[in-house]
Length: 540
Ligand code: ADP
Image 1 (cartoon, rainbow, N blue to C red):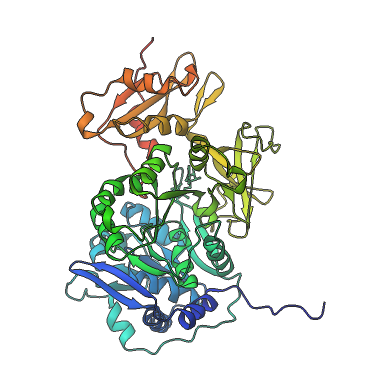
Image 2 (tube, rainbow, N blue to C red):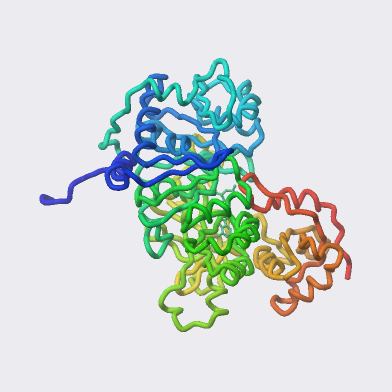
């Protein structure tokens, strides 16, 4: 029809040009060994344009993959901008994986160039002999040292070229970036983000009922830039003009808390284990946290006790969100709606522990064993499925998981309920559910309750084989240092008893020094299950 709106593509060059024009003096600050370094958006974007020219000169063509093996810092952001805006594809490598896994991923993605931090060179040296696709290596000097033979120095490379003009008409459905899931089963799988999905995700993240990212914010970006598109935060900050603070390679709670205090950070995001680890450090600088306004927490279930601790101790609401690498990652986010205006504190606190409501752009549903969609009644439990503008439609060059993508829906592998107001609550990952006598028990619900015990630091619940019931829950508990040797199994069970059905009570409680974590800081139940596979449950 005539008279239609203009057809401007939703692409990253347009987002970056907006950042350059509207927020030129906003800043990117990175923690260094002896302080911090700061650059303006205009400087960062100019450097990204030079990086893009240099990459083109190194022979990087449209759609070819440029990988990064870097901490969270300014140069990594420059690659986040340069690579997609020149028409190539940014592939972020998880620096906490084993060299063999990294090599598999590099090779599978067919990465042509790798940008590596000098501090991570020892890791890259173990990967390099196992890959054949990589033609060039660029080294970012995040630590001092001589030039590494056979590589390009990042600063030298960008100093000698002119900045590239990014094509503002880059097709929005073109690939912009890719990220491999940590692959809890089988090989890691590649998820490919488009320009369009990144831009729409940035818009959604900034909505007031979502993370409400704004020009007035100072955001510390703690979520690793190698994981799940860094939760989309780098692009959303550029778009809104929020100042960015990066911890560099100093991912230490006291350093993070110090940066939050000194840089007057207003918002941050992280997985629950990071928020848990940061709480004590933040308490030490409580008087300087006047600017801190909100925290985003996702990646695994946010225990209600942790949520309450942040509110009580620091007066800060933690916004609980759910997502996956496959959903860019934001899918749902929890804020109480107007319907809860008159609800009591306890109800609101319980609700805030849920994973929240889907953002516009994402649809969710739960599906029962029969394949039929289940009602939104807060009770029916089924597999969570999602579809939308920033949800993967398949994995990159991998047909081994047809069960993940059905009829246009992503089958998440999570089991959840949805209530009448659209609040979704994850019961478990399918593979973590405890199946006892044909009924399921939510390990997440029990863990959340155990972690509310004042003497407990962390707790994970896993299934252990049982001759009569198939599986029964085993609670693995880390006592707080002051309660070590004093906290007993009986105390944990009595603490749980008023809150859950008798048959949900763990058959046994074991005290461990720590819960093993995955490469992105989630409880690694696969390792725990291995550790306790021969655990004999008490008979009575
Ligand atoms: P990985 O498989 O390595 O954990 P992802 O980061 O993509 O990779 O993980 C996505 C999964 O993390 C989800 O399917 C879900 O099981 C879990 N998850 C994410 N956010 C939450 C949350 N708020 N509560 C419970 N589980 C969550």
